[in-house]
Length: 394
Image 1 (cartoon, helix red, strand yellow):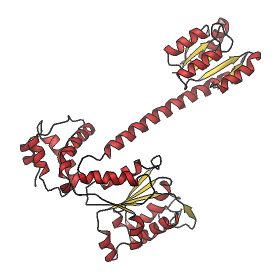
Image 2 (image 1 turned 180 degrees about the vertical axis):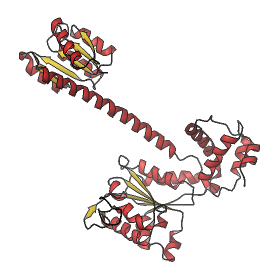
Image 3 (image 1 turned 45 degrees about the vertical axis):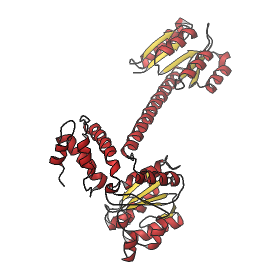
């Protein structure tokens, strides 16, 4: 339902416009104001989708109403009504922010079309605002999801490197055991870079079959292989202007490695089955749990690609090497898990934390998060030493 205010000092014209609007759409809610002063007061007290205002009025003219109202709410839609002598003023109103103007006496079809267009603009503004709000909320949620928690020297060292390298285009190779949070490092590098308004495109090289990895990275043209029913953009194209994160790059096939090397050297890719070179401006972050030096010696990884990727190397330590962060991580995961699953947030006793700090965390942070979730479900409140002894098998 659209809410409309008509500001017009002549009662007959006010009522005619109101009746025209209601004949057009019975769902319209139409308010009336007899002069500009009353109109400004009603605008301040109500949320209108459209203001239809005469220009020449006593107490406060339409130009004053427009300027004062838009200063308070720039998203208001104004449709100005002008006499023949007011056309120049009406044009000036548009420059000041009015949606449009209608000359007296109004052409019915043009009037109704302009009203619909103005209302559509209001809907679009509202949707864009909602989308912006949702995007901001999502970014906050994502930022919280990828928060780096702890105060250990090892973590502080990583954060220092991120701060230094983030706003450059230097390629970063992130190494460390499974579950240590290498993807968190990649997200922080991207979010602190000048490319953060563009996408961070993630590719798990270990999860994509070797025969499909090239198509996934570089796209393909229609008919290039069975099932290629249409042209498809690859991840490098989707990341244009932003960042691509090649996770588990140590599992990438040698042919795909050769194409990635070419993309890095020349800033161009060719889709599978195509012959057209496509320029791409992409920052590359990569991660692996493998010893790439060993992989090079055994012929499974290209040394030239390694040197292209390893401009900056960030080594993420195992959780066993940053045990002082475990208490912070436990509390962080307790809140995160409780919020996502609708559970209450439970405290952990000091004795429970000490036990957790002395466990051999072969699965690292990922394993710790799973253990915290298990203890929130099965343990008491607070989670006790006995709960850890009972439900955490080591």
